[in-house]
Image (cartoon, rainbow, N blue to C red):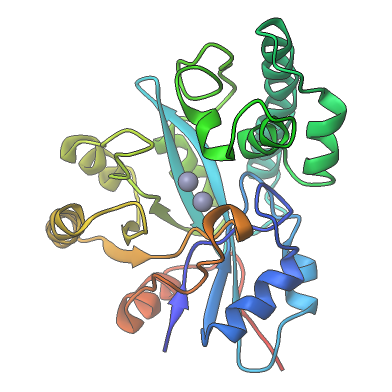
Length: 282
Ligand SMILES: [Zn+2]
Ligand SMILES: [Zn+2]
């Protein structure tokens, strides 16, 4: 039983369509794949329709949160996608993403980077716009040599010259929203230090007290030492130790299935959800 609990499609900032993500998950030998696009469930239908036999889709989402000025990502699974309050908050985040992406493109223009909104918008298509789309437009325009460079202090990295903040949820409230919609929650990559905040133990304990179900331990951006510390913390707090590839297609080197959750942890996590059911490919 191999389940990858974290992946992105063109419904947000991945480069594979939801159907392609399902095909790649199957080709990687996975039994289950969670589709967790940023702040949207828009890819679920196409993913379910394209499910190959033997593959199970766990419908999910990666919610944008902020705590003490730091970006925090919360994975939610098997919630009721029609829940009004959750859907309204996601719409608000997506709207804010659009405004801030336009504002970042304006700032880039002021800095002399020849990137236009039309280029960014074309890359995002119908998907939720994110900084990776701007980064790709910058690389296409020759401003930088690879999209990764955009996330430094010179450009659109947090605190960078062209960075603009956006609306995000308090993570404890986000846990409440997903739980109220019958879903389960996993704190995404809390120790991916190279690109984010190293979330302290007490902050994670606070979220456990707020009803968090699990911690993402197995993530490509978390090293051996942090995985060991997070495994111990999950045990101490009674949380499920989860894992996933955080595949974004070509942007992350097509790594779907490179990290998975233990079968018993998968069962334990899913058994706590009541808002929706996994979809089995036939
Ligand atoms: Zn994330
Ligand atoms: Zn992600």
